[in-house]
Length: 167
Image 1 (cartoon, rainbow, N blue to C red):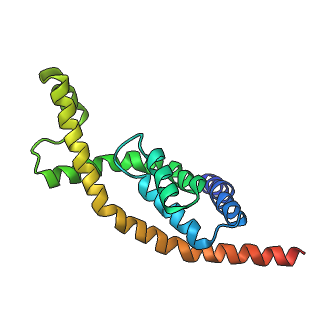
Image 2: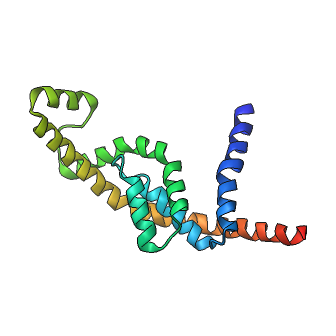
Image 3: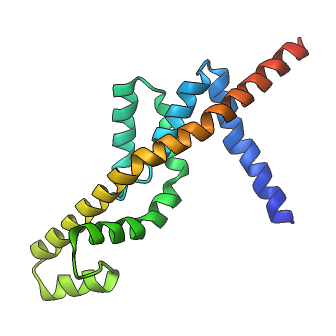
């Protein structure tokens, strides 16, 4: 019971509070929803260490709010780690690879094969995992955007109503 209240307080203060702050800065609900959806989607790519650059490029190219995209990307970092195995598995299905990538397999590749061969096999697996992510990411982006937009419109209208009542 206490953990639930603590988690709710954290969610309201850290997540909802930041989102309300972004809305107060003049971002439209549509722009904020797209920025968050893009940050979450790019934040789940099965390649560690590239999300910051991808989010920055997306923000520049699409003229979206960079701090919002980065915030969403950093928020889903634990999800990125959790989704590595499923994306690698799906990539293995696409490539018809016989061997599943695991820590033991990587260790044996490094001891039995040359370092170059092991890295080549790992790179191939990562490319297939990214291919699997590319197939899923447009659906994820659309679902997150479609879910967030009406919620943010409601939060924005509540915040503006409260502003007018206070005056």
